[in-house]
Length: 479
Image (tube, rainbow, N blue to C red; front, side, top):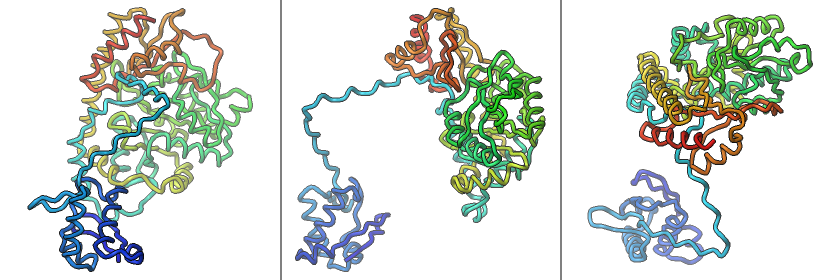
């Protein structure tokens, strides 16, 4: 006998047939089925059960049989019954764990101070504004918005992004050339797959960058070819080298607004050189607009994409301005790449989640997103200034670079200081999470560079930032 319980807000399948076939009476079969549902977790502690009348009707058995089963299980401690509150699953004390003879594992070290770069202050996420925008967006969304849609993304968000990017970053695009993806890494993977279909065998990258992006490139079947960096950014003149790896590069991946992690902007001459290379060789530039919205001590640099929208792919994200957990990013694509990248997006996941797209579109068109970014910019600039002041006072031997924009700083130690690996070990022992510059290298190197740390000063919530600064300064004093 089967039944579905809907009176307490959920469905639970009970099968009494096997128990009846084994000779159990109705009451015993019901008791066994309920006991089993509690034991295997289908009925969680605190769950309110249906009334005896409702359950009897669902299962096609007498109400008195249910009353007696409830009474027996209550007496055994499986259920709890109170006048006026109905019958619920009892909150049982979990059994004590068995004592094991072998030596217990050491607990993992606790991260007390998170200064890992590449993350925003998640406590600054605009929850109230997001909820209000989500309600407005859902109330006005057409019914078809909740169905399967274009792999490019919702038109509401693509229209909002086209206007926003043109106004704020100088991007030249339109909704038909924008694709919404679940993070820049997914967008990069789609681009690499499309380039491989065109015959590319490698991708030129900056010698320091994001290792997860390098892994995405290699997972798509392309080799990574590092470009050296100096005070003007990536050495784009190296793209014209005649060796095979450079000749097979289908594109170059750059962070021109704020090179990650060094913080150097790409000079105008080198931007022009990269675009010229792409035109002459039928290649592409992939512009990761890393931290493009967070600049402090200089005029904002416009997007490189504006130099040639048919040769430069623009990649942006809400991961730093809002939160990485939203998984919202976008590509402004040249005309020749729209079809292949959209086709690959269909194979990857068909389309990105709709409700968050509609909410972000509402935030942008209402002006709320602009106001939030401005608040964050001021918040992070103050954080940066506090970091610089603390280091100047407590670790004056450390050189701080890459701080004109973004959410991180590079701390260069003098030659002969404690090696990076030892610094990281000391940091871990102190509960301090951070990163080293060498971890960001695109390829191993014999270069004997002075030790340097990459510090994400945006990550800790405001109340935890002073303690994180103190722990960092203590680490550097001993270096």
